[in-house]
Image 1: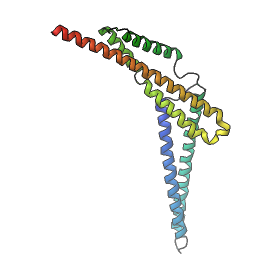
Image 2: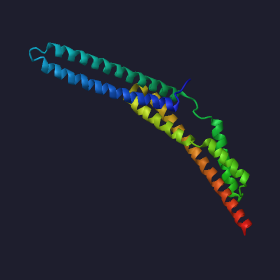
Image 3: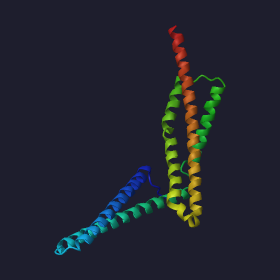
Image 4: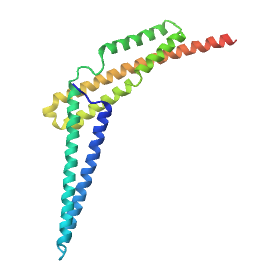
Length: 209
C-alpha cells in the first residue's frame, strides 16, 4: 500500500492551490468578456468584435474547466492517500518505540543513580540523537495533516464517512503519542549529554588546577 511522501503531499496541495487560482481567474475573465459582449452587441457594426470576444470567452471558459478538472484530480489523489493512511496499521515500527522508551528510562535511571556519563557514552548519545532528530516534527506534521484531512475532505460527508473520520483522528492521536515519546527520548538524551559535558568540564578544571 503506497502512501504519498511528505514532499509529494506538498506538491499535490500546492498544485491544487495553483489550479484553484487559475480557475478563479479564468472564471472572472470569462465573466468580464461576457459583460463586454453584452455592451458591444448593442452597438451597430460591432459584429466582428463581438465574435472575437466570444471566442476569447469560450477559451477562458475552457481553461477554467481544465483548471477545475485539475483541482478535482488533486483532491482525489489526496483523498485516496488519506484513506490509505486511515487504514495503515503502523506508521512507526512498534518495536522501535519500545527501544526508544526503554533507552530513555535507562538513561534517566542511570542519572538518578548518580552515574557520571563518560565521553564515550556522550558520543554515543550524540549519535542516537542524530538518528531520531526530526521524527518529532514529522509526526507533528502528520497529525496535523490527518486532522485537516478529516475536516476538509470528509466532515461534510460525516454521515457516510463517520468511520473514516474516526480512523483518521485515531491515527492523528497515534502520531501525537509517537511525537511525545520521541520528545521525551530527546529530553533524556539531552540531560544525559549535558551531565556528561559537565563532568568533562569538571575534570578539565581539576586537571588544569
